[in-house]
Length: 395
Image (cartoon, rainbow, N blue to C red; front, top):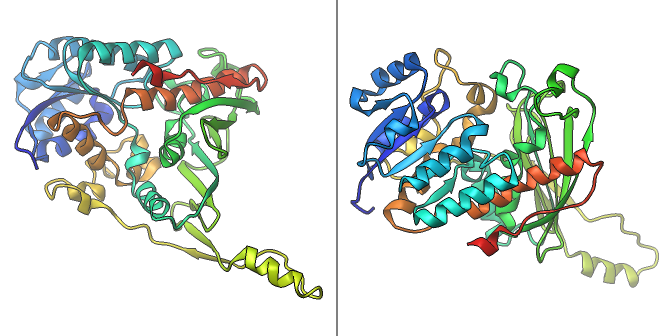
């Protein structure tokens, strides 16, 4: 572990409070500052985590006046993400931003341009690719146990009734990366085109802000230099289904399916035998018929990957600052994001300390976010196939 230490500023602590103790305990973090317009919440955070008054701010502009802050972590509402990311980068700070990266293709370009001009890191803080389920399936794939990948599906189901007003009527696939991130990360291929379709209808009051009528949006994604298709789906309102961020991966040897219910375990399917050899045997025996190979199915316990982390923060894969008395909706519904937060924060910090690109940089973030934006636009145009911009040529 390198000895360099950095100071981190967290903006938006309704959700960002989850990350404060992880940063505070990380061996490469010197101190943490926080910013939120809600003075009461700010005071609660300062008291809970012993943050001095001089490190508490009511806006990002004032926080950026502290030249000792090396990196900014943005946890504010979606419409502010691009603006605040650009402001942090232009001020010469490294930037990590929660999802989505921006609300339009133009905003994605603007964040990339700011990162390039700044020479600083931008990390797209997508939790699902740091969760234990993704780590498990990625290991299977890298070891060759899945065989050839044939198809992937992903979904983010969430009822957002009662969330802050800026979420009202939010188009489902404009916020896609909890669903599609693991699938795009698995193959690490650029998404090149997508076509989406809308289904069902939300009540008229929910259509006003974003002009999206759909209760559900689904899409199919094409990848560069790949014969694999990704199916993606999401809803936000008026669908009777509990919260889930999930993916399913189908390989020629093994396949992984996310559990239906939160108190179940995932299922691993294994296809046994040599199908080609079986067909040769059948050809030699006309009285024998084959109707599929043997499939072994079993529920699995996905291991925790805290051992990959510094011991000071490893326990955060199973414990969070939120509990029955101190709830946040994403944790109440989502089960703590699969133990992802300390892994994600560790990657952000070490990319700065080691002076390298983060695992999920602005280019990946732009592709992942744009996939959803283009899918939504496609749905609004009745399923028209939409090209996804080639952000890699900007890097």
